Length: 423
Length: 168
Image 1 (cartoon, rainbow over the protein chains, first blue to last red):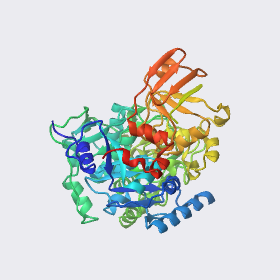
Image 2 (image 1 turned 135 degrees about the vertical axis):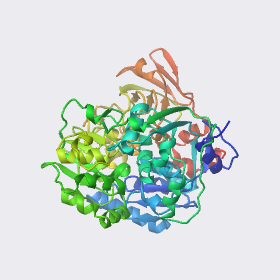
Image 3 (image 1 turned 180 degrees about the vertical axis):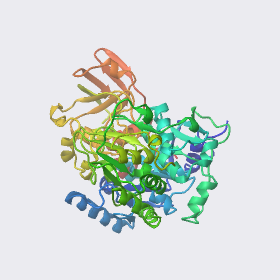
Image 4 (image 1 turned 90 degrees about the vertical axis):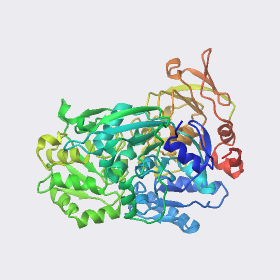
């Protein structure tokens, strides 16, 4: 029987020839990531473990992105505590404004294909977009990796997500993933890994793959994996010439099940309040959903192509009066590219507020928090009540294209009916 | 940590998100005593005040889905819950609970078998749940996970060099 990518990577990292599904293993981890929402707890646990920082090929890196720049004195004090820890243990810190640990590791060449990464953030699955086995854990587990270089895993069964056909206009990777979420439901990926394959993958940019992989966890999956290919290699070579090991599943691998998405049949989708698998075509909405805020950003849709797509829709127009359009590029590099390409200018002229790189609005920590009774269209990945502020606000999750259309109209509309932009 | 507990059931539904358990803005705090007042704060302020110490949280499917925040497990423990029993757990919450020493049992059928206020007995070591006169079997743990719980979580487990228990 052939092996899945998960069997292969975990076998290699546990020093075995072959491992089987559901087997418990102790694996050597290539690198660990934490952010300013989880690092303090990690430090406290690490200090109880009485160990030195373990050697790992890619080490530990910490990113300030959830409370950055600090919105209050407690958060500011936390930042200083983490800064001191990083200095003391020679840990690399990406301070405020540099970007999120859910993107920067790929643009600095730290996380590469075939690697095993864990991060104290559930959306660490994002890094599977470049063919790494990457998953989220809690702070104490992350501390245990920092102390030992190792972590226990159970080999996940793999669900194959076969993508075929071509995307129509106004449909983007986010819509593909919302369709996957609709089919598998909020718990359909529990304890499993998702592997995206099929003829249509070659038409997906690395940024699109990262967007889709980020949401693997939102259906419970441990990993969202795109085997690295020529497109991945080109992307990574833009940032680093360090070596990597492309891992793919064998043709006869033992998949638990296969789901197929025909991209040509998709249209713009939206996950309605209050659950991410409450997915419907925007064209089929039976009631008018007026919105107060549009958020373009997050580890799902805060990348260059997302900003560019929205800017094309918004170019030369103004957003609907009374609607707030909040934009957060995922990293400083993305921000600077968007500046150089005139994307920021277009967004700003249309009425957008541009934030520093980070996770603020999507995690409800600051910079765009929702009041009771408000509605937001977010390009993030979650819409449980209270996620972006008040538990009495409502969150609707859709693509950057649908977000731009909503910002212009002040309500959730089918972007293909607006006649604006076009993909 | 691995003894048998008895407690009153506080019951919740399916797909309870860690973001609901504790909102992101409170993650700047790590002291359990400070965190405990923020359990379900955004959607049900005052939840913690209604919890009798020693209660057992019973939930449906996919409990603890969403974010990786370990604060979710910490705050449940700090609010006075002794254990969590659910139809199924989201994987990071499951791992976090073990890592901080909050006993939990994945027990298919539990949500239909017991209701709010019932008396429940949970035997963590053997993964057995007793409700009224009925005994239900939960998923069994591998030895090393019981060992982590025995040491009340990963921090002690590693400090005591128990991490070599699990073969690579």
